[in-house]
Length: 189
Image 1 (cartoon, rainbow, N blue to C red):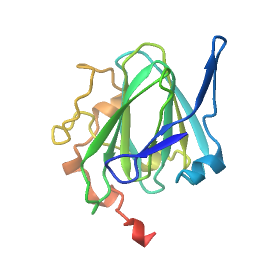
Image 2 (image 1 turned 180 degrees about the vertical axis):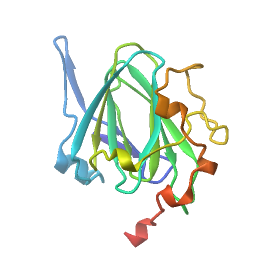
Image 3 (image 1 turned 135 degrees about the vertical axis):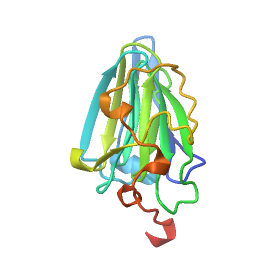
Image 4 (image 1 turned 30 degrees about the horizontal axis):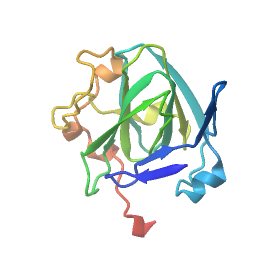
């Protein structure tokens, strides 16, 4: 397994080992010891699976308090996956990073608590999987507007299909500061 720290602190790209032959493939998608040895020692308490048609955009969601870390991957299909640093006081506050995840590359993306997260399906029949470090608490969920002009995320789908809560997202600059997570320097942990 190869783990790459990305340009925004806390974000990781994980490339599990894939063992394949003419019959198909095998990949270990999670092993607590191996992931802890690679720097991802979080305890996951909830697994989710979503199915989307091409053009479905889900996000940009976060939960505060009780922020969720998410280990995400695509079982079939493809997504453009985005994490936005919304931690007040972070040196990268308001910056985002996007990665392509698909059934062929089998990459995983770790998004820690303190980030808004979203994805758009770029292929039909996309199965998206995510492990979460906290249980979902709808009363603590927030939604940053997916096309917030200040973020300038170049989503690869011009007119995505959106849920009502994603259409009603709030621009990061307008989001109530008391509802955003606070940045904790790694030295303070």
